[in-house]
Image (tube, rainbow, N blue to C red; front, side):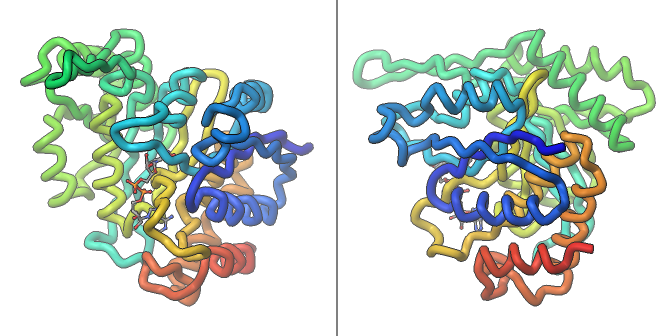
Length: 333
Ligand code: NAD
């Protein structure tokens, strides 16, 4: 059997890391027919929009997509394609596993946590406007429905992965209605899972704790904005954005993509680390039920990182994106 999967190469370093992930996934033994669709900054001229309808149609048809990062202009220009995709398809859970790997230089060697970020509302709802020339307003939306379903998703994930603790991250001391509602919903859902330790943490204190004692944490569930920020912080604790994968999951469709962005000006050609994209592919294989193939790829990545012979520049090596991906393929058993 072959899977039909939508492939969105994205902008900047996207096409390179996605190509690397693609050849690795193809070597895993799982048969995939890729439907390649274009979205992002570079297709505006061709389609008149960064998110042409055929991209959404393809994901709705295939149910699963692997995606490269897409550039969003800062302060002006078009709305984030990433946010639009997540909202249009109601991909409400953004899952970002953050793990230490041997051979990856970092402050800690024993981090293994998952950030579960609510992906459809909060300040990312896009309800923002100017009030005259000198003021602006953005509205933070938190609903019981979205908060309860992300809480349930986090606890189910903790149970499935035999994790011990869920920590809700909030700022309900200041935003009593919005974060207060989020907190109330997670507290309520936590009661359905007495076997899992439940803990509450204010986002500023959480930032400090993550830097000081990240190995105290297991599953973290939080509203959209805090999840966006803390997942980059957590990435910095395990070697950087080059190694942290992600998934956007809804009830019908799922898009797998690295946590990092398109790094438009930061990196030369063939220097980006494709580990995050490859591990996003591993998450995709698990989602499809292809756990053996997922294991093969993950073990190969772990081996290559640990051996340290083929590392990209961000990890202190001098190998290219393509060489690293080939080393992962060679390391597969
Ligand atoms: P970024 O993640 O693109 O890059 C930040 C820094 O991290 C880079 O300068 C680079 O040093 C490093 N880095 C990131 N990925 C790497 C990799 N694979 N290998 C090696 N080093 C890597 O963040 P940014 O510069 O703030 O954002 C650039 C653009 O990406 C923006 O337009 C932003 O909106 C967009 N973005 C998109 C997504 C997405 O598509 N899901 C996510 C985040 C940012």
